[in-house]
Image (cartoon, rainbow, N blue to C red):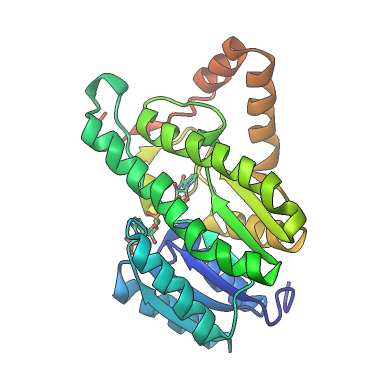
Length: 265
Ligand SMILES: NC(=O)c1ccc[n+]([C@@H]2O[C@H](COP(=O)([O-])OP(=O)(O)OC[C@H]3O[C@@H](n4cnc5c(N)ncnc54)[C@H](OP(=O)(O)O)[C@@H]3O)[C@@H](O)[C@H]2O)c1
């Protein structure tokens, strides 16, 4: 793995925790310099220390993805401090677990504001730079919830389906201009985001390092889409494309929605 990303310059949103943090550190181990973007300065400083301990450059950028101007400044800072940018990983996101009848429009809008519009703020901040350079890689953490609706996640599922659709179109539009677009669709990952969700043994939570490995493979091999873990996710999408009844049944028998341990359901 060492030096597979030697000299590459990467910016990652949601890098203060979970998947983003694991990816930032693993990319540094692979030889990349990394700009870490999120709101929590203290956690970002910790990640930056881990990156520097690998002998790589780290830039800390405190920003909320909901703020489009801040994201433009974040890209500018990353480019100036790292001396360019090869990869932008749109990973920041929030999760909301709530049965559809109990959701409010405010809650749904807030999830869309971060997961969909926040991600688009990142895309529109970095795209002009990559278009001018005629190269670059934009990778986004979508979710298996953006491939198949799983209860009780309607607000989150809606935001991830929207993301998936947007990136599918972008991927086709900018391919001939030298820009790679990759979509990462993980199932349940062991991060603070779903710490209150118990998953059955048949579909356990897996380590954020597994997603980090997929992101690196996606960048290096210019993959269009990575489902993580491979087999169970492909089985679900395949079953669902054959018949929604089969897809719903697979969700039910595998208890893909998990169980809420905080009694919030
Ligand atoms: N965990 C799962 O099972 C799972 C499965 C599929 C997909 N995903 C997706 O993976 C991505 C990362 O999630 P995770 O599991 O690693 O969760 P996490 O541990 O809670 O990390 C979420 C990250 O997003 C950042 N963030 C949240 N809102 C933000 C905002 N408004 N502006 C900037 N940064 C923001 C957080 O940083 P600050 O709080 O410091 O801002 C944090 O670094 C998300 O897009 C999520 O939807 C997760």
